[in-house]
Amino acid sequence: TGYITIDSGYKNTGATKSAITFLDGEEGILRYRGYPIEQLAEQSSFLEVAYLLIYGTLPTQAELDEFSNQITKHTLVHEDVRKIFDGFPSAAHPMAILSSLICALTAFYPESVSPDLSKENIDLNVIRLMAKLPTIAAWTYKNNMGHPLNYPRNDLDYAANFLYMMFSFPTEKYEINPVVVRAINKLLILHADHEQNCSTSTVRLVGSANASLYGSVSAGINALWGPLHGGANQEVVEMLEAIQRDGGDTSKFIAKAKDKNDPFRLMGFGHRVYKNFDPRAKIIKKAADEVLTALGISDPLLKIAQELEQAALTDPYFVERKLYPNVDFYSGIIYKAIGIPTEMFTVMFALGRLPGWIAQWKEMRENKEPIGRPRQVYTGELDRDYTPIEQR
Ligand code: CMC
Image 1 (cartoon, rainbow, N blue to C red):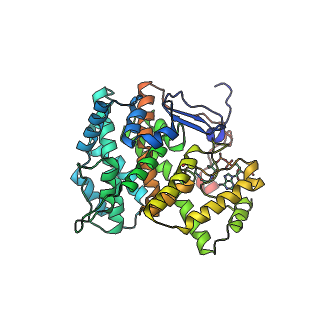
Image 2: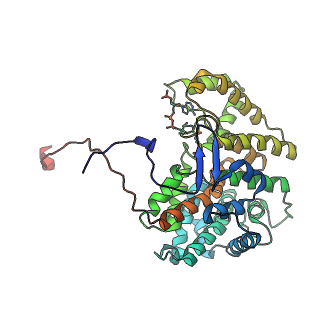
Image 3: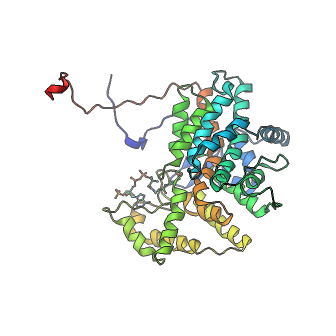
């Protein structure tokens, strides 16, 4: 079988070639299809970035219109998907519902599991998933709150429609705030892809068995939910709130994070690849300031976060280990400011990451990559004889 080397956590093992996202962790560079994240976050829209990631080029106006019209046309989900909500406990975590229902879509749209890799079939599945994820995501929140579920509004763009489904009530007129729409667009763009991270590798691995796009993405959603991955954004705000309840002394929590006998980690800090800074964190930190100012909100958690960052950046423990704030450190403060509850933060991450998962799944299938099947080095007993139970 040849010589097997082990690389736990794949710290130095490449799993694939990819032409989607370029990342230089030493220099803090992130580019989608060659375009710097800074330019896209400032000038583009989420759907344009989704098109770029999935199809490889920036769309012309006509291509973008067609892409977004197609998505708008498919925003409704099968009525029976709505009924499944009645079976979940009302306090269910939205990520549990989201991953289940994305997987359930394979039952409602059986052509999504077909091995047909024609452009038409792939495009239809891509459009349906992009269109239906925001509807299901907003419904997980409404269900949690015991509010009536809102149907999508096709006169609104992607981000505005999501906000409408999240926050409007049939009883009152809902005003969409352009500051909030811009903030959502920016956050979704910043989360849209990040090469072979844990959830994306999951999507590719599941998809490598020729599993459906929806099934693969549902697996990715579960990976993302983990607190070491996308679940960190919820944990960051919960940590900041705990510091606030404790009287606001950040040094105590820095000491806990450094204590090797204490499992506590500074959430939103550190990254497998970025060893200089996370370029997304820089943009989000600035955006947090801007959004809070524009909305006239002063959140004491922002001050605690800034203090924590300052203290960590000058502490030898964090400096030596090259631990910097990551994308999750300031995003929760923006979500909170625009009224998104903590339990929905990782759902927001999933909404943003969707085009990346789709692009990576599509690339893997189009490149006809072989089934993913890592090897192991066996460390158990070598050879034993079975003993009947009464003799053990
Ligand atoms: N607080 C305290 N110590 C830390 C932290 C932290 N947040 N992160 C890493 N360390 C220490 C770790 O204990 C280890 O120390 P030592 O060398 O003394 O054993 C050293 O730094 C290297 O850490 P590692 O765990 O070997 O690094 P990794 O590449 O396996 O893990 C990470 C990366 C992101 C899982 C980790 O930094 C972490 O747990 N961070 C907190 C959770 C978090 O913010 N996750 C979001 C990641 S970014 C977005 C996303 O993927 O969703």
